[in-house]
Amino acid sequence: MGERIKELRQQEHLTQAQLAERLGVTQDSISLWETGKRIPDTQYLPALCRIFQVSADYFLGLEDESGEKLYTD
Image (cartoon, rainbow, N blue to C red):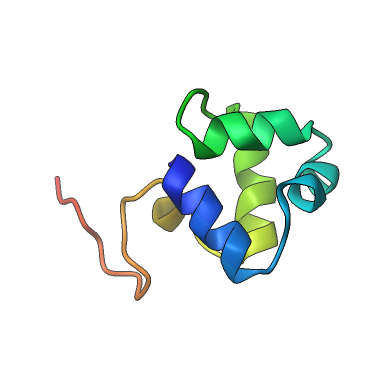
């Protein structure tokens, strides 16, 4: 998940500080998420999806960029 946050943040040309401000967290939190040392609380998932304009499934690695499911039941 951390790699996806970093990738999406960079695609949007946002700094860690800018993303942190939008989410109401510290820059250190973003850094910890991106390095995989922590994961974001679920309360931040909807905001991350809105900021990056992606689905929760994409964000969580359950589908690819085209919307194709990566996992089946």
